[in-house]
Length: 54
Image 1: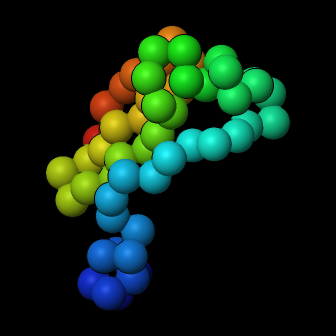
Image 2: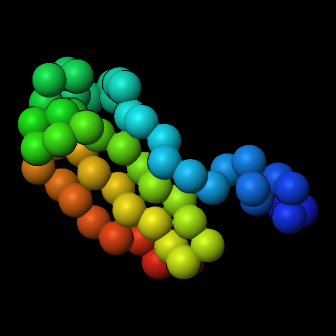
């Protein structure tokens, strides 16, 4: 990816739906989201919250 393409992907992305779970379940502990940064990232939905390494 080019640096410009990477900048477009970095940031916090709200998860609003998944095929296997209802929206209420996704937000059970807070807003479901993915956060992608140069240092890795974070994923949170339902009771799951985890850091991601790159």
